[in-house]
Length: 360
Ligand SMILES: Cc1cc2nc3c(=O)[nH]c(=O)nc-3n(C[C@H](O)[C@H](O)[C@H](O)COP(=O)(O)OP(=O)(O)OC[C@H]3O[C@@H](n4cnc5c(N)ncnc54)[C@H](O)[C@@H]3O)c2cc1C
Image (cartoon, rainbow, N blue to C red; front, top):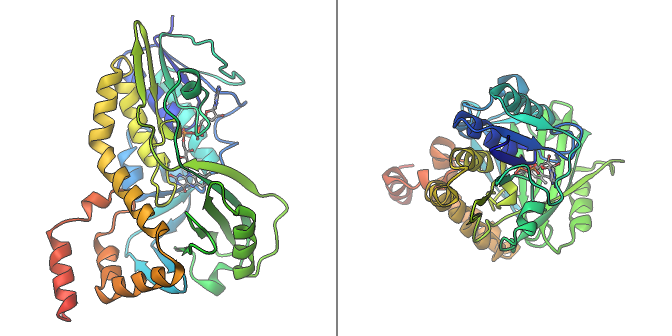
């Protein structure tokens, strides 16, 4: 007998499975691939605070590839630099991350079945669709579609990171002309290894953005490039109940992703924990994840909308303005990669006031 059928053994599926077993449910996870994580195309960059929020599900410390202490954010040709004393984020081996989560789900008592593609036959009346951005579960149960996606291309390549920056600093390139609707990035993995990537709003010129980024860094086209999509707005509804049948969507399947950066593991993982907890109460799930994470996801979308509305000269002007207000130093001290609502506090007003009169 199975109480909860989780579709997908990505981070959301494994976390939902763990949370559901902790409620005493018998849980089966179906994963279409032969293992967890080897097909993930993610950069594996997670905020330190976000990883702490998932510490009940995974100990990330052995999975860290690189420690991040800041970012150079290029607003067209104007750079805003944020630096922190302690690591603010970690680059993790995403394959190992997913594999560890699936292993933890099994240790918690869930049964993970690999090489099982769910095509319409479910093992329980309670289904958690954690099957990624192209969610079969969402389509099968006629959930409202997601309206916005970003298309990405990326590759990890040998690169002399030290010649350009240092290995603890990531670089982001915002430009409506070059990377419309998203950005280009370089994430160091080591002194001589980095991930390069681009995203553009769908439908968009991903190939041209990719060529441009490689040209900027003077690196040759790699043989293998991973391409994928990221949803950047949640579905209007992520759960349903019809008689005994209960269906909950979590992670990318629900669109629980930061629209600014495309990061989905932390929000999706936290929401998946709620899906597991409320597996038999779809309404409770819908209310709790929206109350806890909706405002931050909303702010990320508003920031994305604003950035998308600016031409390159306006982006550069915005960066100059932020620097005049010394917001780079405010972000270095009080920045939050995930929870913008936490940055809006009285110190922010006093910081801006001090910057305006020249005290910051
Ligand atoms: C280029 C790129 C870079 C990214 N970088 C980051 C980053 O640095 N940090 C971050 O937080 N996020 C990042 N993301 C986003 C992140 O990868 C996703 O948000 C995250 O993987 C979502 O987890 P999930 O478990 O919801 O879905 P997924 O990771 O997509 O897992 C879904 C699982 O379901 C399985 N599945 C699908 N359909 C079926 C089916 N019918 N039957 C059985 N199994 C099925 C799939 O095989 C897969 O294992 C990035 C995404 C991309 C594309």
